[in-house]
Length: 335
Image (tube, rainbow, N blue to C red; front, side, top):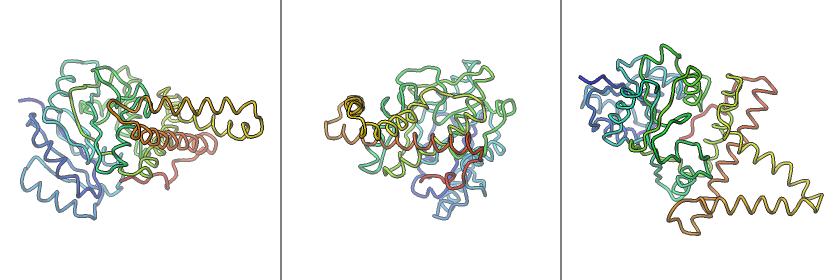
């Protein structure tokens, strides 16, 4: 029999999405699975839905996450898992039927790979979410080296919806519970420090429901930037070079705008930089995207860059200058 996959799903107040996520996994062409929904004490009816799903299929179970945050859910799920492989899945992800089998095949045929993930198909349920999805698939929006923009199978520095051999957690440890965001990036950085690799499989498809408002997208990327600095401090290294670009963007304009107001000679430079940003964002907004929507995608990219950049500088202030632990007000999950 094929080795069991333990599918771990962190969840809190996901009544609208959790059943679709679980049923997609149950429909997988890889049958030797268990599904562990780690619930953060949901109050919206999620737990009732889970009770019904558990009665319908013995492969589904639910365990509690009293801490209510994602990294705790990851680790609780790992502790309760029995599989040879551990698959982490978001409660708003929907897997293609062959997603698990494609990823297992990589782990079985590539001994140098410790983590493997597939291709995000960004979807939305709002007009704002539609342009945010396009921004998150754009190299201008999230960077050329980001797994969200890959189009071929390749080695990467991190992936979404990752699968691991369960033995790796005994070798490397589990997820850092201080990280509300970037806990998977930090864990994968530890893998690579040990000479292990991460692989992206383009044909392994999984949908991801993006945040449905610019405010939520901003806060999500603020947290990414904020906790990325914490990861850097933990390891004494900048884990990926592209992470510094939004922070440099923010710093440039904080310095440039007041000086351009005082020194007319700097105004053409500021104007050229702004024009270059706008034209590049519009040009890279995606294929078959109309002109009006290109401007909307440009705005969405700006929201992501602003959130990440300000989060990064806030992280520098908190973790490097003030030597603080992560602030509680930045720990909340976006919904």
